[in-house]
Length: 543
Image 1 (cartoon, rainbow, N blue to C red):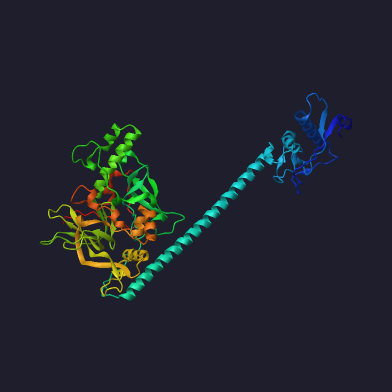
Image 2: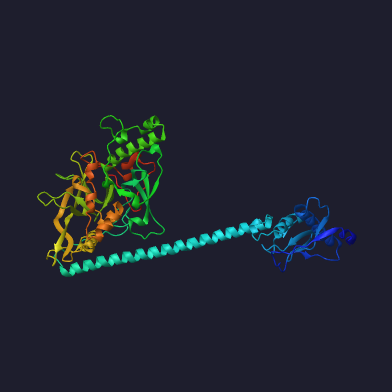
């Protein structure tokens, strides 16, 4: 038994405060009051703890000995009996869990010092169990906040998607209603079969979207820079269809040796290539230097500073842009002919990278006004055929574009008998007319398309570029101006913001490449991979 006379030498310390109610069904064994070793260990814990408390809290000249008078409420010293008969002692009761234990009296003293303080913040306790408990609670709180933020974002995304879907549905209904009214007012004799191009066009997210895979565009950095769209990814919160629902992966133009990194951009920070003109080249080069024949690696060695390399990259991008704009590569061949007397080999394609842009069958494209026609408004071709024709010398080829041509007209009601329902021309044509009629404040007039010429044929030099639906293009170029104009009933002529393709080029005849990657050459730091479904075709024009 423990020596009772020794106990009289100690001054008891009673800890009135506790932070736990204890736990039921604890591990190991309760102390046995008839077991000498258990009693000795209990007294040992109490004496050591008392000594520590006195050292920390008693007056400097106080030479008395202190002893803990029992553990705070809910704490219990228990015994674990080993296989060899030895005994280990653990103090249970910490509110962290029924498994949380103090292994030594010194560990528990840190907790007692907090209990006898006036602090009720567990973070002020320096014992290991409280530190871990506070860290776990902070982590749980952070996870709960993250989960709440995630749920809030998901809810906001769902609301935004629902609003966008409702907006898209309303717009579609408006288009259909406008088309229905126009059809009722004038059925018209124009009944040629003009089916909308099927979905799934390689590189095209939606027929009326501004940007397509493989196109050369301007993007906003510290200033406007040139790049190529390598791929398009849908944003998590976006609704499929609109340009603003996507992230565009752009390869900056320059030269591969400059190792320029891929840029991730949104539509608001981009412009079609033809919205700006390529600035003059300031780099001192021999006259009529060709981008693909310049040793850019050697030039890069001469420009050692980062600013100088940026300047070299800028100059390289200008030359690369002009080279790409003077090129084409066709894809998805439909038919091919062989040379016959008086005729040269021809091939018909579904799509073509035409300079900066990707042009597909059934696209509306801007073309030159036919000779003898009114040139006061643009002429738009609904593309029905893309044909590559071999040059008479047997080397190379040029492009020919075929289709019916139209111009936008503002007509008084009732509509004339020869009025053409826009949906019979194509989706993009119908979308443009529906938008204009929605903005138009004079309800005695209607916008529509007037046939300029059936089965028009234009040479590549007469193609100015793609036609863009007004709101799609203006919401990229200047959305605030467009919204203000639309509210005032003014229709912005978006095509006026575009250059004609030939203005940015150097040659009168396009250079044909076997694919888009060859046309880009060393101008980008990554390899261009054609979009799924695009079959690029190499054809020399010789038979």
